[in-house]
Length: 315
Image (tube, rainbow, N blue to C red; front, side, top):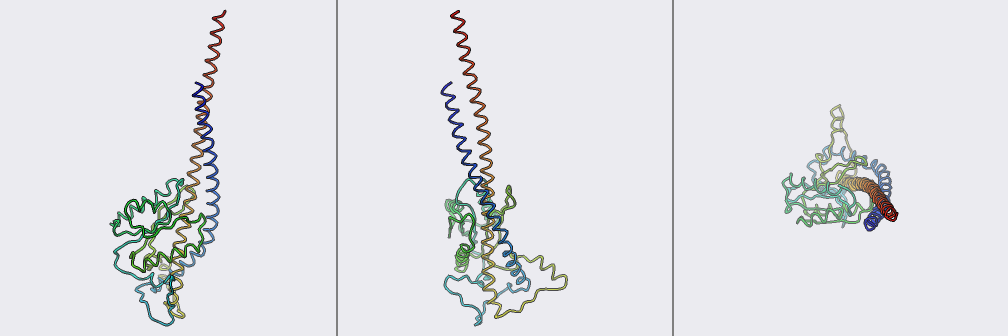
């Protein structure tokens, strides 16, 4: 009985330490969630504005059937510079690129498994295989998963900050667009978990390249134009020069927004998972303490019975 009591005491002590760790991790994740939500709110203003400009351009059909001109007013593409006109290039789809945003670590509940499962369903439903799919993995979990299953992970990026910086995204966009320009893939989708609230997130798959009026969506402006007016632009110095500036900003906002959204969902999932772990630890501790008290009470009762029996025998 003594050995049993000691074992229960050790389990109680161990579970209390686990509770302290998960409780601290919950507090950290909650703090990060609060920070990134404030950051996302301010960034959303810029993202809405750049999307509004691109949608207006789509409404004027500037993005449809664009032909790259040799005008002297068109900026020359320098080394490692993102070309906006390259993002409009359409070609037959032989390889599909998929940007998969996951976390680098575990302890985030169903966050990673949901993204990976839904991405695999997207690949299957589209009729793609490992041979014609190119993976761009942002996060170690996704990179390791697709590598083990024989997919072509053409690029992986680990160690994304908990509160991602916009300048880090610019380098990612340059790499992603450069691979599109090199015909590593012919179309590109971004797959991630969209943050709904602290307890809920939903999978999203958005087409990033090639940029066109179809994958941008212009329902609101179409509605306005039906009411009797449509946006008209006068371009200076040229249409190409405008697109060279605006389209890379749109691509950067799309990738950065997806990373921010995914990171927000990750922190929320981590906070929820750690809260569940902490609550479970408390339940286990309560059950073990009840078990310990019952065992100790039983041991005390047995000792009293033995003493009473011995005393009666002596009498």
